[in-house]
Length: 205
Image 1 (cartoon, rainbow, N blue to C red):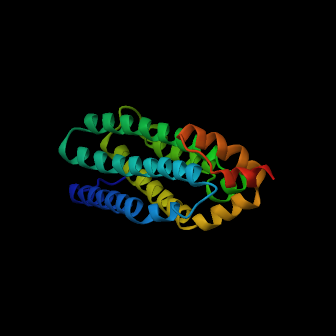
Image 2: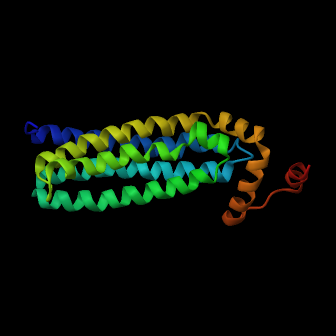
């Protein structure tokens, strides 16, 4: 791969920082209003969206940190940051997968298929080390920055589609009440919430 200029790396870091800010603003001020309309899956959908947001934020944080480290420090420092943030990304992906399994099967298959995220994530994180050897050199780390950035952008699209289709998520949960009941009650118990009497009567019948 041809050497990448420091100006380009700084531009990539600026883009990652901007996307982090926009994602936080979108989640805090816009997406939260959609959860107030949910009745069946408010706890489960909220938990899944929070963990998915964490995963995307960590991907952008990796791009930001490694890009700046390649400009300001030696490749060894960038490699250390890459390894630490890669471990955090894997941990967030595991957590997101667990949260996705708490959703009804129909919702999970259509809106939250976490298993589809595993292959591109593992490839994006491992490919630079497999192709560039160890310790990672600057060209391999640059490859990692672009691969992880592309993955983060792709997952941002999926995250927004899930958030904007909360009405569809609620409708699917209503169409599959058996599975929704079995998942929602334990999740609400763990979250310390209780269902009103009217809701329990509906579930029984």
